Length: 384
Length: 216
Image (cartoon, each protein chain N blue to C red):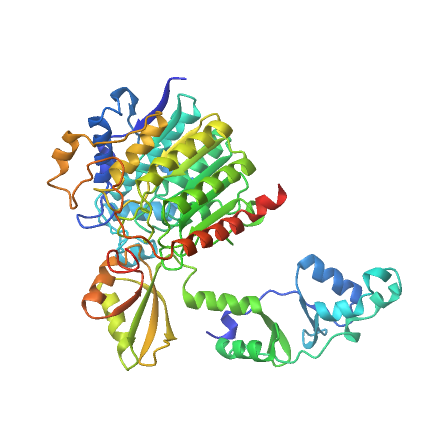
């Protein structure tokens, strides 16, 4: 085995850009990349270049008609009505030039990560531009065009005959991936997210357990709004260990959206950097115990691109390399971005204490989440 | 919504001359709790539910007594179908019948011919569609004054933001001077429209805006 971990990156991945004002902004990938470089945690020898996914690879999940529509949209040849039927040209997924190519780079990046791990050239691989978990077979949704997570899973199934555990800690339910493998017993999906009571996409209830042969292979832990570190991590850690022990995967692919952070503008959870230091640590332990270390991590949501995403995604890479950043953030990074940042950049790796006022309903929320977790894992706890 | 668009168009039924034993087997195999009983031309004669079959079956302590009872035709135990519906009936009306008469299956007839079946399940599915939760979207609650034109006002704001509405529900509020309008909108980012509504004096009940209340 060569590297312990590889980091898939090239500037091509930043071409996935809807507009200057859209909340989904891949500048965050560059910010994380530079933060890691500046602090010395990322070495050039660990960086691998992505490839573009082929049409056949994209068609592992997506409908031909949809892929054609995305291609046409990217060269300005798709009519408005047809576009809207495919979810293209909406406020969430506006049309932009060469959107097919930009999306294919992201899918290719995640497939590159998969190949490094599945061919045994690295134990872990990171594809921060990926994790576009809302994309459906025939429809763009929630800022996502092609679902690189779903494609990667189907690719691993077909090329490597692998049983895949998908773990999603984005604040939004991982609906696209769940529905793609809803009736498949060789793919197990676990999503921990803010309840769909108010938040997009609205699904991800504990009762969504899978269908047909896949019944019992879909797990959802919807946590209450204002959930804090302790309760979020409790749900994550327990569900991940128990689901992994039940499913016995060959490989784990994690979707590491970081929009559950208190600062994130789109969601209503209250976790801090503590959660993002811990999430990858547990994923790594689980991958080591059940999968010989095989773990592919992707990015995902994350809409405070200044105060949250660079640090949170850097932790992901550091954990893959057994590093634990703490203390001060590199001056060079701060001085390069301070002026452009919309918020004052954090000076330390950890969040300062008291970034939010104490949540009055904390005990209630914690006990509700505990009950949700219990119900969600009921089927596998009962049989053990 | 009319009944035609929500009823089961494929159902399991049984001929009046079939035996009780066959009915029992059908129910177990097809995993259904209601069997409409029909004649040669598909006209509805009655209904057999799992309750009739339980009544006709021996106790588990006397499993093997009177096996000949299972050879009797289902017509001997079927009950009158009671409430029936027409394909053009309105779903909301049907829900009232389900609720008030505490029943769980309504056959749908054209003349006397059975053309569909509505159970509690179809009824619930119709409501799921009404709430729009079967499509990805965000949930937005706005308290508006209880007076004419308010829904149109909020809807036109959503239009200005190019947001597709998957459903609208209007709830009574505990305060009679207002109503709660609930929208499901097809976007992951409702923040711009929420901020606009608040700036224009609307009370947005949820989601809480960061920094505003609820400890955020």
